[in-house]
Image (spheres, rainbow, N blue to C red):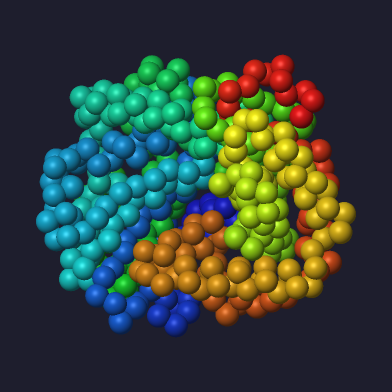
Length: 444
């Protein structure tokens, strides 16, 4: 029997199968299709645990817009064995922490504890994700919390402008919608709708349980299997969603200028366009380019706009990668009266890098930044746990640190120039949140 993943069908074993991926890293696939990946770090006294579900906001229909995020809130509200207080106090009583987050393509529930308390973390977190009851009273309570969260987000124009920009690129496709949902979608959503979404999508083949720290892989597998016993996830293989690679092609909207009026002290600007997916081989060249363009204090945009001219406090470039698409953008926050000047400087830099690429010196610096961030980002058990889970859930394999650094080292000037030309040579979209009216934009 097979399960589906982002990379196509994968064999589901008749019994649990374990293999070593790298030194200290092991993976077990249970007969249900659920995957357990761990990394042993004997030198630490902590452990990080994450339950990653390959379901996010892009998997929602319009009537369920925001269901993934709604569910993230509800899974900590109580199970058949524990109340919400039991869940939170159980972890906090041993000095641990637990939380969750939702993205467009996956949802993560995680905990960090002392190594000796990992059995407790496994039992609590697996119970919450696998066997929540979604009490109707809790649904109503969390509905109010989420509506307040949406309102709070709207009071953060520096965050809101990225949502405006994403919608400008993707439109009313799932990738273009807010992860949180909107008041119009959250208000009428029923407990039964959320529960059906939960049971339809939270199936064993969609789940990766990752752990890193002072642990033993076989012991973690036993803990997980014990915690799963008797829950809806303690079953045979379930039919998973269609692999993302087989989704309909993403339709990017025609470049446009969008303004959202807010009575703010700053103008918040994002200029950019369509990008590349996370499996695209050009992602390493784009990472180097992003560092040179706007990835740090030595970057072109930071030097030109902040250091030389003092026009903005915050200015940076970024790239977002999804299974089959992506986007690139440049953000700046500045005084409204300076916004035209800042935008002209950003556009000029993007035109220059698309036409001429970067210099050999910048290539060296951009590679160094990429390699340093990769390695320094693996200094704690939580980061290593996330690396394991994302590699398994999103990429289907685990690239070693040495392999990753070699891929960065192999990037050439020509590759960086090509991706700069492809992504910044296109007509770009502009999103602005600030004290402007829409008719003020055409001459920008």
